[in-house]
Image (cartoon, rainbow, N blue to C red; front, side, top):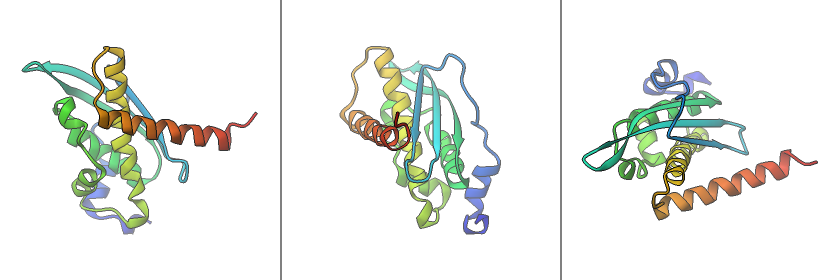
Length: 157
């Protein structure tokens, strides 16, 4: 399977500089993929610059395949230093472009990064009683629905 990945994907997979957990994170996002079982956590530390909140630090823990881990690493590269407003706009297309492409069967892995970052930002905004942009609410609703479907399928009593 590794021979299906380009050099950039393998670099992001093997040389992760943002892997780990931030103690006392300002925001934590957790998402999972029902079909493949990948789970991703994104931790953010938020700072303020020019009266804007920005991602001062970011870490991730991903339990999944090469594509999921590489996507997490590329996401962190894209998000660190960005304002929250700009970070919210990071899409799976941006992640895939940063990776130089993914095999079609692994494209879904890039969605996890986008959603986990969105959830971390959502968590930060809720904790700090700040306005939540509509694009974050839409993504949050999708994550909640996925979690309900997962629990219904695997957590029956």
